[in-house]
Image (cartoon, rainbow, N blue to C red):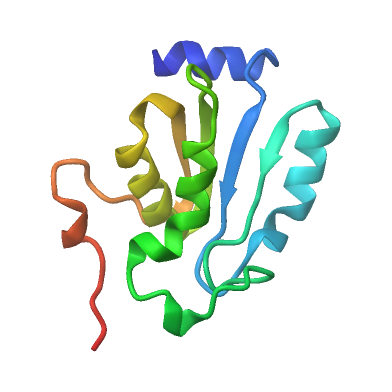
Length: 133
């Protein structure tokens, strides 16, 4: 259960965390938190989402929200079977971890929304994504 996964994390038995950045940021915004977590022995991924920070993808080549979230989705896809992560996000990263949680529910132990967009779970995800023409 989620409660068991969070208890395991708090006692150091679950070591995978994915930190998702928000709009106008990249993985660098988590560097202090990520460093402290790594020193404590946790495995931390604070990768840049598409067209952000050091990610080489160009914004014009990122037409969909799924394309933008692809680095996070790929990280979860590559987890070994049975391994789960605690996802932490801020700002618009809430939308990314919502998508990742829908795509890989068996690989997400918990989603932590830190001053982030937190969509309701009853609506289809397309309702939450803004279309700009």
